[in-house]
View: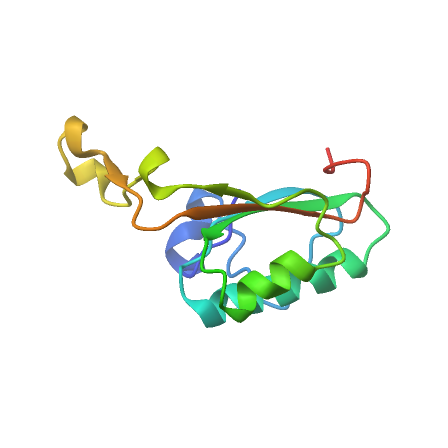
Length: 133
């Protein structure tokens, strides 16, 4: 299952709809987030995750993948979140690539796109002993 901007199209494929929808309120489980690389969207995501984590006593966790733009408010919110459970992992851009969203239209040798930025990996969880199962 996943969240998406287009639930009218993506629901048949398992979409829960928008992550920002008031109806998306998980109280337990583990989730991965790789938001659009738009600073305002990333900050809104962190704010919602912090609110979701604060609102439940059930085990809830998020692994977050974002560009290592260390000067934007979203990065600062992630690094200072009271729910951050591990040191931030920064992967240099030359050490990884991404599966491009249009991989189905590309030759197999062009499926992966080199990363344009260093990437930060975060773990937010309301369980200090590790992510929710």
